[in-house]
Picture 1: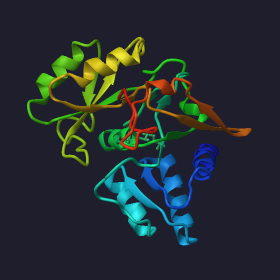
Picture 2: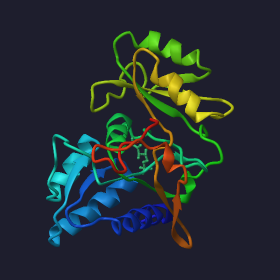
Picture 3: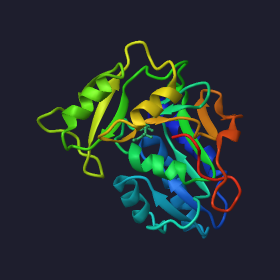
Length: 245
Ligand code: 5RP
């Protein structure tokens, strides 16, 4: 196992300490979140009563194989969602979706009382936009959607190429946007992309992260977001679904 894999596993295993009997868990996607799902499988095997909402078909298959009960319909909030990220800025805003699962990942994060991100320290950036920003779009007239996104200041490519594009779990395309000078204002950009006709969802997760567990050579450390006030009350009147997506 490479050093980076060891760090991913260390971050995910630290997040397992937050799991309590009876919880409904949101399970993320990608190589870091996979370690968390595997750990949840061990907890279930040891007798803990847990249920989960997986954020991709791949995670659903993994969870089912590990014997973790899967919830298909959600009434109320998810207790705890744990997922990886591609980039994390100092405000714990994220870029996600380089694994292609951003739409369901965002629904799961938005439906959770607590959203915990697990990363190795290579994912920390000063400013988002070091790499591409994935945007899921409808395949219908996608070129017109792409033109609107280019008008927001990006260049872009179709994931997988136009000949054999990558198709998401939802039957859509991913456009990978590049912002040459990085992303100055993730809040404004997220809002502008969100209202672009043809866009299904984008990979900016703004003011959604409650806790980020970052694994480095000295072990995992926990970063918290102070601006929890941005959060709306949930269905139970307590902490609940996030305000900004
Ligand atoms: C998938 C995601 C992943 O969480 C993100 O790409 C990080 O993946 P990994 O843990 O494999 O680096 O957003 O859509």
